[in-house]
Image 1 (cartoon, rainbow, N blue to C red):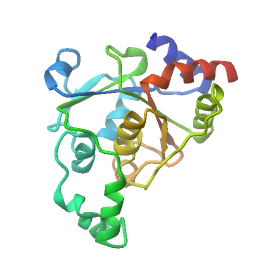
Image 2: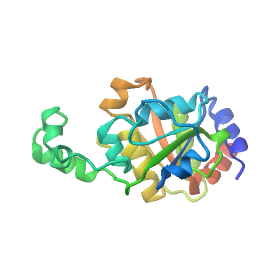
Image 3: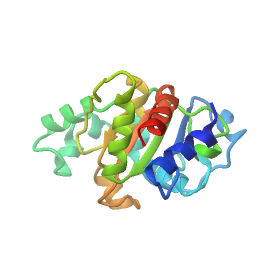
Image 4: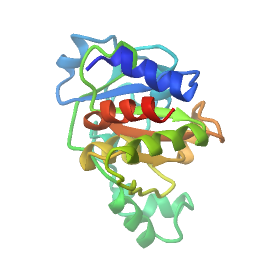
Length: 219
């Protein structure tokens, strides 16, 4: 797969100002550090934005700071106050501890890993697990059309306003092997450069080439 060519198709077809981002999950840190330099302190959603601007790097639990996001991605165990719903209730994310538990139970969660790498798609040095595109709604619309083009299959989507770029975009896209869309979460809107007019889509690597080829046809 020619990542440079696919990135060019996506960027030119959608008139993107930033790059699609390759995200790779590593069971062992040693496999990541052989290829990438380690980042400074960040959070997962900001790491994706940083990579979209041209940087390649990896992080571990020591660098990926959001405790809930890190737990969802598998870098650490989720805190009990998250798993039992009490933290969401306390943060007024949900109306009660019970509804908080129902929400976190519904979020896709990854198995334990030690590192995550982020890179612009065109600079991918290893096959990613998922490619993330941050764009305007009209641009994401074209990616939805490209996903539908070959088989006429509608896109199923699940969002809850929390754990968007970790659970919805990365883990859920990998586990279902289908693209997923999110509008960000409290953390990504408060603590990153994600703007209020942007939407995010995660594309599993198995679907990337087909979507890029379809995008090239319909545009």
